[in-house]
Length: 259
Image (cartoon, rainbow, N blue to C red; front, side):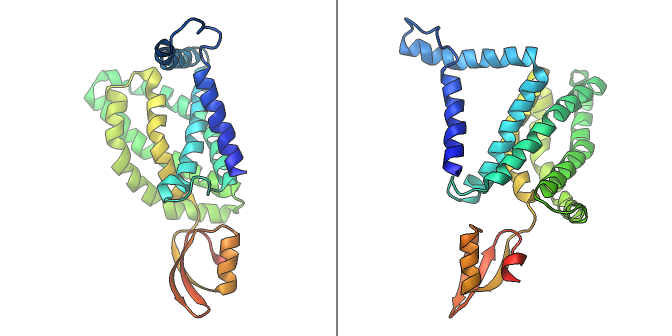
């Protein structure tokens, strides 16, 4: 299923990009086509951004959330590109869909009360607002959504937010301030969400990893329990083995397996 999903999504994306000039390329050389494809795709993006800004930014947000979660489970974790939880990735895409219009409205509001054109002090104030109120609220909602969509009850979700939000905020302070110096200093207003979303590909991979309930834990299991881990496709590395007992470094919530 994972292979079919990746083939369909990437295949559609590549087909759409390469066929942007369909019906217009008759008589064009290969070099002309290669030159026009990126330019015309960018022109199409600009047109969509002007005519349907919220929908365009939301669609990009969904793509970034899907890619970020997929990469957090595969490339960034050193795993096979097909070894990922598709339902988790789709849940993250849904969260990205919900966040898209909200992020658009936030940047509109932020620019209206703190125009970055007003100078360095205003830009620093925008970064401070991004890294405090906006960051804390958005990440708390994200962690809550991940937990609720995974089937956790509200007390569990609330505790997860309290446990994780501090570490996420600290990580964000190491990651975003320099990025936002570029955001508000160099990037035109209409392209800020595209720029932030591009960087978000890395940040969402970090956030998706941190938002998942549970962490790497060394647990003792017997041979039967180890077999259950493998059947459930859990990520578990054997760090010690003796007779019928194993110590595994397991990622995630292993309570149901080892209880």
